[in-house]
Amino acid sequence: MRLLLVEDDKMLGTSLKKGLEFEHYATEWVQTGEDAKEALKTSEFNLAILDINLPDCSGIEILKTIRHSPRNKQLPVLLLTAIDRVEQKVIGLDAGADDYLTKPFDLKELLARLRVILRRAEGKTDNILRTKDMELDLNTRQLLKSGVYYTPTASEFKLLTLLMQRPGKLISKTRMEEELYGWQGDVESNTVEVTIYNLRKKLGKETITTLRGVGYMVSA
Image 1 (cartoon, rainbow, N blue to C red):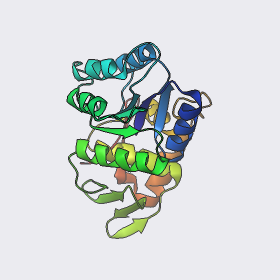
Image 2: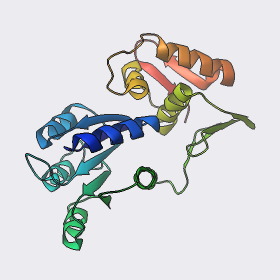
Image 3: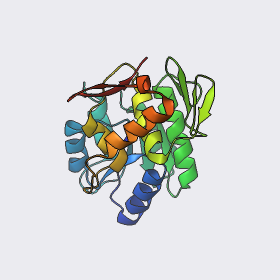
């Protein structure tokens, strides 16, 4: 799960990025509107957390750009605002925001709102990913396959979540590395292969399909 965090406050941005990545959200943090627009042009995200008050432009302007972009118009957006005024919240929601949160806020509330938005975006009423023979509970981090429960490691959970969000679709190794490491530079070259190997060892070789040189997938 990849998030775009747009927040110019360095202290808040640092703590949010750390908290989000602790919860296994790969997070790209930018501090200006221009950097946000560039990131949206070049990368794919599952959700954007957008501060309204940025140094170079209004977050509402970025939100409107997102909603008018064929590439990103369906991207879920959570607005952050330091101004607790109904008028500003209404403007944000009318511009296409999925939700808003007023500063200061508790990280637990932010995470809860993210889960609701993501479930809504995926058309789900619960927090469980399902494929032909597997169910992954995103709250308990338990995997059910053929009547047997498994507890994936942190790396296994990240890759299973990514694969089971898009069953029947190939996910590239590069995309998987981004899920595991976020935007850190110290990527170990064989971590994806080792994690896939361990998952197959636990769940069966047929669970994850490899198309050499292209990527991996699970059956729908």
